Image 1 (cartoon, helix red, strand yellow):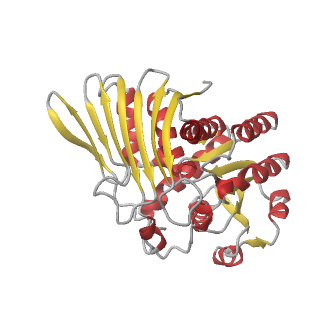
Image 2: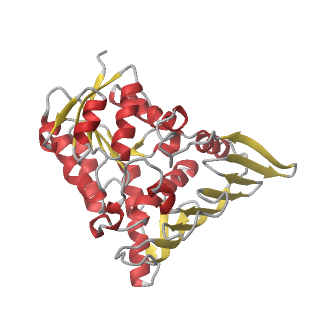
Length: 348
């Protein structure tokens, strides 16, 4: 079978990440790059075509699949055009900025028999897929409650030398920080438990000076199995994040506990006490010297490989359109709950 031929839309941190992932795979070929001021240099680095116009790339007949890494509010229009041109599409999270847009994307993919993937690379990190296997196997019994911590020190990312200014974070069209941070968490929890978010309550705030969008959210979620979850997400930290709390899940089951650090150790506790189950090697996602190392790139390469599997008719673990829509719906419910000061019920 011929290699899947890829185009990359967007040339920032994630555009380069996906270009590198495609370039590393033996069954995928990078054909062209478009979008953003760094696109010419990115195309030159990988010795592929640079397209000055994104639509031109999306219409190329020598491209089978497109990875979209542009700001959130551009995902819908670009993905829809790609699928109208019969391209498979992998969209960096969030899938879009409205549930209606997500629904249209999912329907068009189904109508055209295309794969619509979502950039949930966290599914491919060692501790996360190990946690899922343990939960499915009943290692801690039935999950009943979860605490999730996601404090982000923006200063570390901006000083990391990876070539992104993150100004899109402040664009109201992209709907605030929660739409960037929480989709990974919502997807992992749905994936761990095979359950849906049914109720959301939230307080969202803006603490950073000169910023007009939400930068901090404290939310509660109820899942279809009755499990309850608290989520703290913020990019307004004045200093590096609490030690060990950059991304942390504390999961309580009926027979045991799970302490999941996707960037550190996965531990479980039962009547025999705590033990380490697996460890994620240091990802180094905030530094120029490690951003494209084998350790960080492993999840992205596995994600693209899984995307190719689905395209070629094999099973794959990649997040798909319905998973993207579920996270967008929950994030929008958080913002709505805060604005309306009420619980929001989601249609599952």
